[in-house]
Image 1: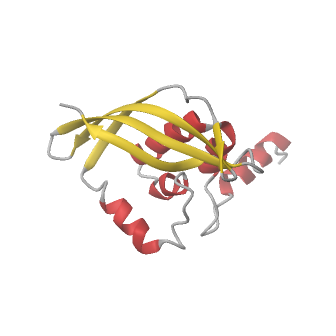
Image 2: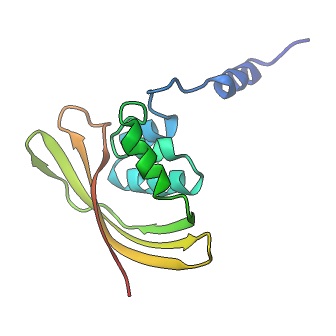
Length: 146
């Protein structure tokens, strides 16, 4: 039986696994794309239960920061869905070897008990001056909307 080369490539790609401690492909792609992509990927990861990817988008390693990672995951155990309206990143600014950008967001979340909340604010996303593909969330400043 002959198998087309494209099929072999697809099979190989599907069978690859991420080694523990290695960044997920989603985190790597978002980090290379830019600030807004990082925040978009963060909410996509949260909504699909890919907490390791969400954690990595904060520039953290689930293996190295295991207790902190567990606390992070527990913080979302009652969240069924988080819908984020992610705005365009603001102007980049450089400080102390880092490039920073502010990304505005409006978030609506739905809890497992049927209640929900609304938040708005910004995420500060940064990358190293020497590595243009290392964007990650540095901090979040979100407040509850009334």
